[in-house]
Image: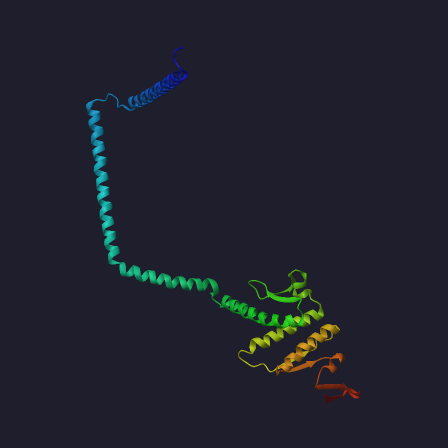
Length: 267
């Protein structure tokens, strides 16, 4: 009771430390015992001298064979290094040729084929993309609702309906008037495409106006008037009487009796 609490705490901590040391010593003893058991298990048997000498001779023979194999491998490596040094120029030429072959291989994968079909399709697809670029400019004037696109890896066309959240539609789903406007845009785009090499002065349209309603017919005639204003001659063959008011110069073929016809030029 004469001792204070701090002294008791220090003594308890010292006692715990001693206990930990005892536990660690016991663990070390167990480890050493296990190692001793393993060592005793691996200890060679009590063989006679002849057996030991035979095992030693076998080990030495194996060592000699290993040394011989190592010497042969070193000799092979040295010869390979010498040959590589002698063939360094050939290796450089091979690497250059491989780079050239890689370029041709890439080209072959893109456009190569024995009959030229792959390159032809590639060139046609590129030309069609350019044509659609011109055609869509004209189609934006004729009908802002539609835009033409090419089906990937083919020459087929799709119509993008911009009033229906850019829905892709088949060209066969268009009405007669819409088909005429798309065909007219393609024809005008073809004229624009050809104008880089040859000046397209004339454009002839045979029929196609009979399926148009009044508003669509007006839009189509406005487009043709715009072409005429650019200095191009536009010829229209049609039986639609509403068009006569918009055409300045007309050639009329009138049916007569007896299977005869009369050609009249008016303006």
